[in-house]
Length: 159
Image (cartoon, rainbow, N blue to C red):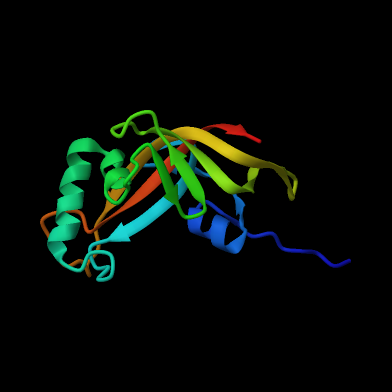
């Protein structure tokens, strides 16, 4: 019998680019739930932050306003943001709550029965953005966290 290995991931990039099934993280930043990692960023990314002050400015805004500061940073239309194979729809530019609308449906893993995955294809996920900081030894500065992860806590799924 020829078995096929199905790749699963909690990271948006791997879901969109590699076609992995979305298997949510169950715990982020001390919170239980169903989370998708949307972005991983650190102060040592020269292409993203050519000058360290660009990173520090963003981090300060995130510290004051939360995840919406990251969402707003490059968006012209802050309520309908095209991002990496999906659209992020919000009611307010300072709202962490949003709906993710995927250009192509993604497969979500809701659990397992034995080794068999329980999956369903979805096109929309409603929930809320959150983030967590991390520190590294290779960062370019030492006054703020050297990086952050942006997560989306998934609350409802739609076809």
